[in-house]
Amino acid sequence: MGMRRKTREITVGKVTVGGSAPVSVQSMTNTNTADVEATVKQILGLEDAGCEIIRVAVPYMDAADAIAAIRPRIHIPLIADIHFDSRLALRSIKNGADGLRLNPGNIGAKARVKEVVKAAKDCKVPIRIGVNAGSLEKDILKKYTHPTAEALVESALRHIRILEDMDFTDIKVSLKASSVLLTIDSYRLLAEKVDYPFHIGITEAGTLFSGTVKSSVGIGILLSEGIGDTLRVSITGDPVEEVRVGWEILKSLNLR
Image 1: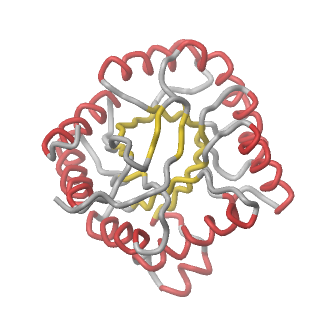
Image 2 (image 1 turned 90 degrees about the horizontal axis):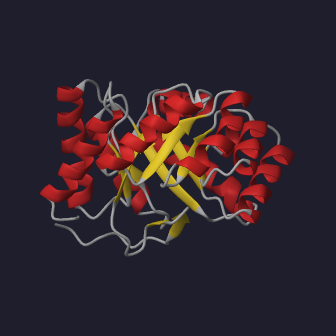
């Protein structure tokens, strides 16, 4: 096992990520977030399985509003997953989200980004920058012709700088690809450049069998090199299986 990478520490709700904190296990609901009862039921089941941080999709305002009803009924930090609309981020923070997953370069004009960053800072809400090989910026894709580790890292650094320029450093970063090797290379490269904590995983890993294999290999290699502060195993179907596999990966490396 490699020495654990030294990272700065951030707090998501009551869970510490990075620094000397243990690697935490996350999952994401697959319910309609606006369906409060179904979402709460699924999250409580995930808590029972050992999930320590949960993410919900917030694609529209009804989902952002549902956070106000969901948050008081669960016991683990709740992350709002935002794409493109700064208003959803602001509403999610107002309604009690413990963290955001968004890329600041994708949510509109600089004034809108500033508004979100101010709200996040005021409420001590960290932001996860999530770079995905399947949705890189057009200019970066043109420069590298296809998703490479360098391309993913350039995209991540671009989003990081937007937040740093606004004096916001309560950040964690993920670099995800369906390719295990591309994912590993990307995290290794970014680990040389920043000290922010990393959320690790293999995106679109697949069914229970293939998803378990791909995630175990990719996440396991990174953790064995000391890279990774929180993880999510991506498996199609019941998210409880994501949590179970995540714990088995950590236990197999004597990390939990």
